[in-house]
Image 1 (tube, rainbow, N blue to C red):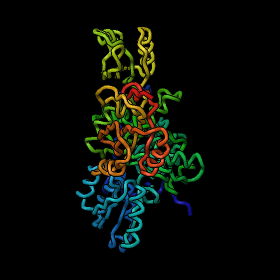
Image 2: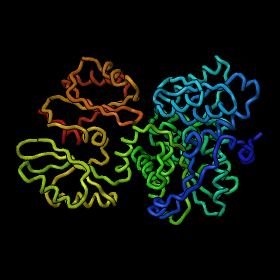
Image 3: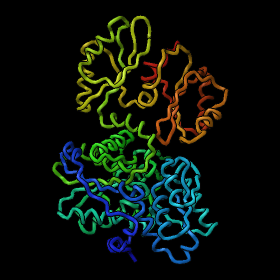
Image 4: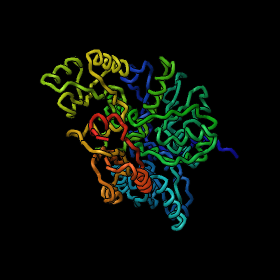
Length: 508
């Protein structure tokens, strides 16, 4: 028999633990975007996320024997806290399996709520496999984070509240962050039943777009790997029941990159003085991207601010990338004459714009290479005008604003050229956890001469390394076979303009 989700949602007793969160107008965003933007403040829940709605609704419906045996869940953090709080209220023992890459703030919160924490694997999927196996061996009830009708119904109370709080028939679209799909399925099931004209638009990180790919292929797919910057939605495969609902009721899914997410975190802060986690800002990032490509004005748009569980030290990385995501900073490489007064002359050509970064690299006695960051306010239009102005003054330049190597590494490195022959540059990623850098270095070993090395902890879920390796041409194929066997994602950057301009001057 088909599940009557609207009725199931109305009957969900989530308010035993959850709050009826505000639907607030984002005044600054609304003015900037020429639309009324409303934030559904799920970051204000007792566990700073909507996840406790579904977790409690599932657990309150367990049988007496199931409660007695206890429950287990797998989670990158927010579902874990929801299960832990529900277990505390219902006096049920709870075990939570969390990836080792989970932010410490989420792990600590689960411990404080009285649940037992097991750290296993580097991704949600690895934690999930361990949890389901443990559930069978220990006869525990597994509380799925999204692929369960009770979970979906609990999350659907978010949609119920939105329609109660905005009774006039003027909502154009609701933007929903998507991981496994429980939240968007619940919201769509309720909203489309009562107000089918409202668009339901999902938002995913472009490196974890399992729902978008599933809808595109008309079946659930398993992503080869997922990025975990937005750890709350880092899922390789959307749930079976959420996908079924989304296939019928979700209008579209948008993907955004990390810079756009960082910019959205800043947008929410500017309006509310609250800091959401990356997954919590997804909906705003998607809303902004949607408006950039749509003829949509003077409409009412709702975005779910879904969570605020973030380690404080990640703010450093987010603040740096937000300006780029908002297109408020232009990064570029420029060649200037190596003579007294050339810096002053160059700055005069920039004008009264605020310079955010200025890194100098000696090239030779005739010219110098400069890495420059300039604050802009009108996005691509102002950046193009600035570049045209500098070229008019005779300064050759290369735009580095979208160059990952420049943003992650070059802007933090100092010193002159390394005049080395046969040097190749590679960028690596590894899950950021204690001991991970040492493990990476141990895996690399001593076979190859490392000529350049840069690592910086950005407060993100993945650590990133820029490495120069000297290798003779006849050994290059052997090196690439070696690097492939390391099982660390890597990309060759030898031809990257940032490298050629600032970090090397080879003789080959």
